[in-house]
Image 1 (cartoon, rainbow, N blue to C red):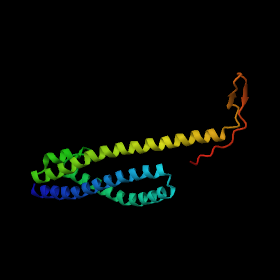
Image 2 (image 1 turned 90 degrees about the horizontal axis):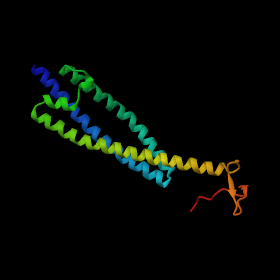
Image 3 (image 1 turned 135 degrees about the horizontal axis):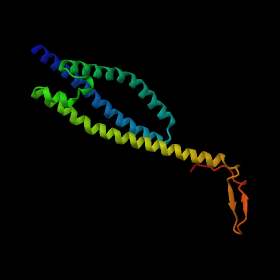
Image 4 (image 1 turned 30 degrees about the horizontal axis):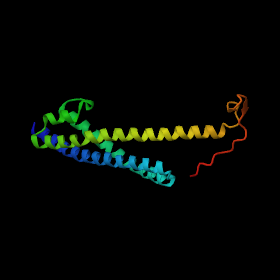
Length: 173
């Protein structure tokens, strides 16, 4: 029994380190989302390209971190005699000593608002990008749809004529 308790305590220590890295990763993701929105608004293609490259290189590193978390979760589930899907921080808190329980609770309290904020920021970024795409679609449709039969102008006397004398619009301010 003592060996199992020591094993669980060691795994919890590893889990705390992993949770700290998760907290840092979420904070970094929040800052990257803000940077993406800023670069999109400023139309900085070079900056967006550099940001994408850095995100791709970091995603490989985070994948190994993710595998480590899943491994610890599986090992804790085995030690506690439950399925890995049932292994949650709340369940872990219920069986830990007071010192470890406080540490896990602290990480959990940091993670919950961060993940909620990440959800909101992600949604804001998705909405901005979808509005940019919609605006670009409408703009391109307006520019390249000039010769189509659907563009009709009504004069003051009610007669109709096709709009053929319209040129491209200069979008620079």
